[in-house]
Image (tube, rainbow, N blue to C red; front, side, top):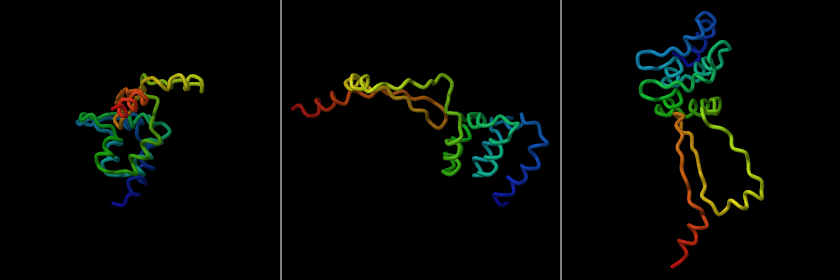
Length: 145
């Protein structure tokens, strides 16, 4: 089957089915978007996420019983094109994450000698926190003999 055929079929099917079916999970917890990711069907993924009556980009956050979102499945399958598209359209305002106000230049100058706190959001939406030590302390430790 050509890649265009499943996407074309969705043009006819999506208006006929209840939109809640787009987020319906099977026995393994996978949704139609997981299927599209596993089968590298960009046109299908786009139609599922962009369906006006559907859940939209929230579909990208649904995890199956293996703990993988459609983005995680795309990455596992080595489907770079799909993973890139999911990242471009996914909801980046994860629960509990709030944008920090930017520091003024004066505050930045004062903070140069403190540790750096980093939060990284992985493909499955998990937050990893990391504290990097002050780079001036690292430099002085490595140069003092």
